[in-house]
Length: 329
Image 1 (cartoon, rainbow, N blue to C red):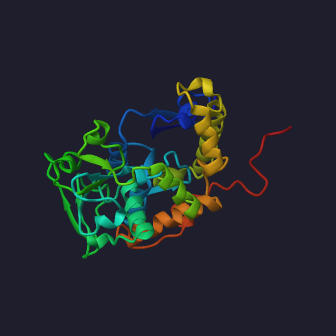
Image 2: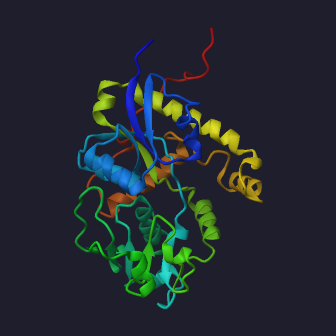
Image 3: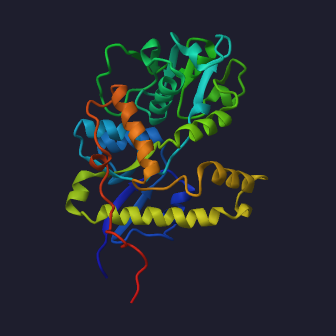
């Protein structure tokens, strides 16, 4: 029996990777050990700082910084996590904040400045709502995955271990928090905390119609030594993740598998607003617009010194024109 390459993959337990997790889809030539039992921040840090996994779902922002610092990682254009981010901007309700312009001169807490969600929210705040980033005092809860030197006009500090931006927002020590997750005071319906955009969904739909951007949060990172030794790996991984997504999306069209009363309505609304495949992989025209915006924000915010092309950032997964279809005798 042919010997397969034994590799570890760390990623989220998403529906679109479930066919890989249960071995209904396999990576040709690879025997995967898949690890899903860790939060995103831990996974990203362990991959970039300890090299514990061969392949990992990775913060797109951290990946840009890693490449900017010549760290030995590469990526393929597989985007397991996307999310609109207007609904993750939270405010203290006693501070008189009702619109983005009210954030000028305020103190905003973040998980890290390099968190992909925060990178997107900061870019959106500046470009879509005209709020200069250097008009704000930024307070981070934990250190970035990759050490960077921020622009001198950016006011920034990092909290000690016993402090949390979530509790500081509720207590009024911060005016706002931009976070990758729904924060605990909001989930607890604490009246001291609210969303900046009460109807965030309408704001996000308007943003998409205006820009065509469905923000990419994560890429699929690979240790450079692996792809140097096995140049076929990038294409085989890409094909398997695409197949896994296709199998999952076909299954998800059946509303009986999800215990939500109006699930099918939500599915149809997504198609009307975002198109037939808003989760597409590869360097398509739509994804190029999203990724080039992401790179631009990262460079502008001082998280990367150089502005690379997408071809420099992502391994080629091209199989040649009109190739890569079904096998026939």
